[in-house]
Image (tube, rainbow, N blue to C red; front, side, top):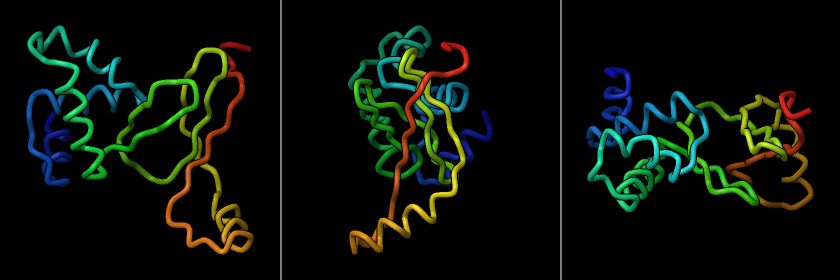
Amino acid sequence: MNNYITLLKSNQIKVTPQRLAIVELMDVHGHISVRDIFTKIQTNFPSLSLATVYKNINAMVENSFIKELKIVGQDAKYELTKEEHSHMICKKCGKVEDIILETKSIVSSATKISHYTIDESSIQLFGVCPECS
């Protein structure tokens, strides 16, 4: 719990019981939707509204404390910001897993081809996870 408090404070985010619960869920589940967060913490915070969860998530996204992961056909998922990584997504069960890939050559090639200045990339790989195979 103290680590979550330190993390929030070091990112200039006000520490509240709701935010602590959200951060703990993200740490445990990795990638989680707002609706899943709401469902899981509603028992501990019965007066909490879905709008409040969205407000807290948006505040932490704006502070770059968490990142939004948009996946076609799924609700957006959120994760704690960490080192650059890509995502493996199961087309059957929807599970999302982190994978560390060397993306520098992809970004370099894209820069040469497009003449864009690329400052952020997101790679999502879709397939079937071992559990669903």
